[in-house]
Length: 188
Image (cartoon, rainbow, N blue to C red; front, top):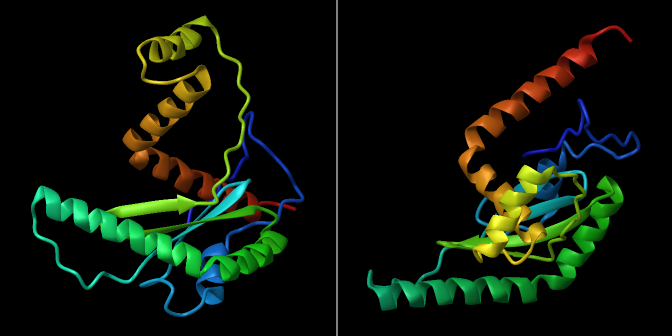
């Protein structure tokens, strides 16, 4: 599970936000048996907890052709849609309990085969100040049709960095956790 720490230079701090370090275990214990094949993936930040579970495999075998792959993707999407509808009331109740416990919104998703769908996720505005060279990068992405707006261009850029910097970001999170441990061991 990943939890945003929010400490450090220029970092966000909110002392009264409860930790969500046990969210993975809480959801694993709280979710009904049979919903997912294994424990769900639980990701937390200061605004939201996203719970994504792997649905049980399909019984249908599709040929390894373009049409077969399209049929498999359609069946996976249909099964995820069915899961979403059949579990809606229970997910709402579990989300209410988790929101009271962790004071964060809860979003859901499901994965099946090569298909992953998220539902009920939130989008949080993030304010930033950019100098002209950074604005020119965003404007180039907009002018080229890669993004619809500066906001969309910034979101695209963050996703791209996240895809290409996973290892580095994981090391950074590990280092931040170590600093937190050292702080906790220090004098009171």
